Each structure stands twice: as C-alpha cells, then as structure tokens.
Length: 112
Image 1: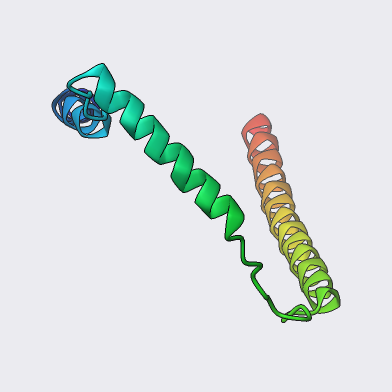
Image 2: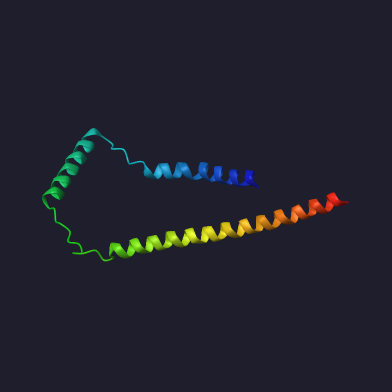
C-alpha cells in the first residue's frame, strides 16, 4: 500500500511540476529595445508610487484586550496539565492492578 501511495505521489509530482514551472516563467522580450523600454516604464511606475504615498488609518485601540488572552492561555495550559496528570494517574492505577494480578498468579503457580 505504501508503494502504491509513493508511486501516485511521484507520478503527480512528475506530471504537474513542469506545468507549474512553465506557468511561472516570464515571457522573454523579443529584442533588447523592448527590454530597455520596459525597464524605463517600471522605473516611472515605481517613482509615481513613491510620490503618491497615502498613509492607512487603522483602529485607534486594540479590539481584543491582552489580559483576557493571557488568562485564557493560562487556563488552557492548566487544563491540559490537569488532564495529563489524570491520564497518568489512571495508567499508574492500571499498571499497579496488573502488577498485583501477576504477583498473585506467580504465587499461585509457585504453590503447586
């Protein structure tokens, strides 16, 4: 089953990677003159954007207070720690019961 999944993943990678690479490659200019004209146009556009900067106005205050988030995070950590400790207590209890059962079986088999 693993070999089948690996073959499918490899096949998809081989089939779809060239398509993605072909779509991301830029068109090459036909002549050097077009390249210099495009470079000048790009520089003009960049200068225009730099000259027309408009600041963005955001909210004046935070929408969620940090104290509530901090208390929530601590509550989650303590809850997870408590659940972990309860799980370990249950596993320890099961192990102790099984150890006691095995000890009784050993004693019973030694008495025969």
